[in-house]
Length: 300
Image (cartoon, rainbow, N blue to C red; front, side):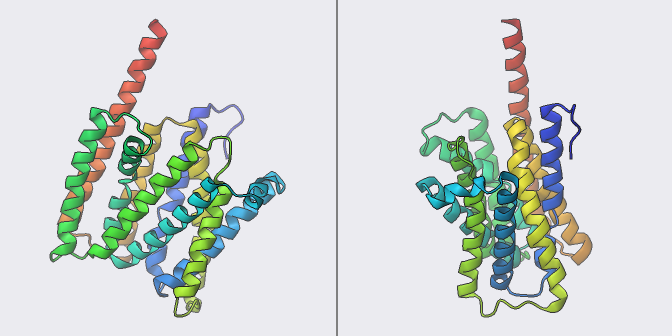
């Protein structure tokens, strides 16, 4: 996918960008499938989880799956949190506006910052405080549309916030398990989500016309994007990753509007603009500070 002489930064940028482009039609595919969200979740979790584990086994010649024979508490936590995040995401995408889901999902860095402050006892600077404040305003505007005459639903909005928090927790776990790959545990988490859906679904059968969309989502979109979005960021600064990840919150609603004509409404657009604007400014601030620190280091 990348040229041999390519720099690590460019390699990471292209891999991450490809992952974002691949995941962007995810919510559109969920909307195109007529089956209820439990049936969708069963196939999404089962197919993507199996694809991830098979991929790990092939790439590592089976060695990558050995840690699952003796899982640690981090492995168990990762599987449970990642699986619950999958459940929340599919529920949100089928129970509120797609724009609401993706705009609220973009708040995951805020949850990561809160985890760093209150769980890991790391210092939180002025940039993070201002970003959190602006993001809370955007969330309130989006929620006001769901509570009012907008097309969103508050239950789906709350599920999106849980999915955002689950993303933050999974990345926090991975951050402190650098010597141990969390990819197999995330594959198991997807399978757990599929197993939970199998118990709760009235039926796991989906209409024949939806099987192509389901196969595309479970065997291509989710596992390929998952592989890229866990590989590319290893070569990029956090701010660059944050800016690239915001593209999904732009492309996803546009695809649903273009194909299905779903109008997010003015409050969702205003609230989403506040959320995305806060994240963009925050990451640009972080980039500028990183460049300044590098210049100072070179002069020293």
